Amino acid sequence: MKYQKTSFTRGAWVKASELVNGSKAIIISETNPQPSQFFNKDGSAKMQDVCKVRFEHLNEALNVSLNATTINGLVSAFGEDSINWQNQPLIVETEKVRVGGKAVVALYLIPEGCKKIDDENGYAIIVREGDLPTKEEIPVVENDDIPIENIPF
Image (cartoon, rainbow, N blue to C red):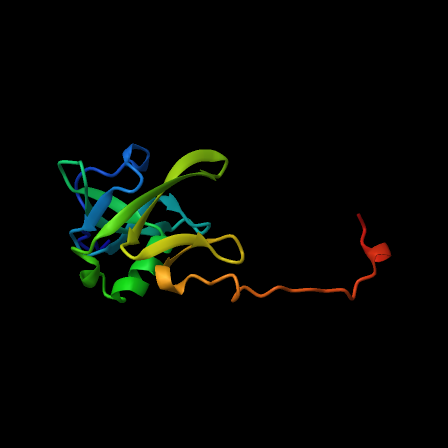
């Protein structure tokens, strides 16, 4: 059997529950995909995007698995190459969520000048402050075509 050399990000991992909302952070390494501890239905390892992050008030840089919302925000703010995400000012935002019924703390790294909001389907997205829709831009859908007697509740 042939083996290939693999490289993993070494060191301690962040505990999002111990971070302070609104504190500052910077990414100090390139972000790279690596296998996670979770598996796909076919038995293959799920991948995670990992980088080293230095957090305000902590003495060492920690490993962080970036979620899709954070990655999309970084791409919008700094481009597709994770090299350009390094040394950029970020704001820490944590949120208690349930995953598979278990309470966990999600970590978002938000570029300065951006904000995490919910999209029209309730998913978290990160957008530039100026890109937030104004009340006038949010469409109001009125549908008077359904007679009230046809509504089942």
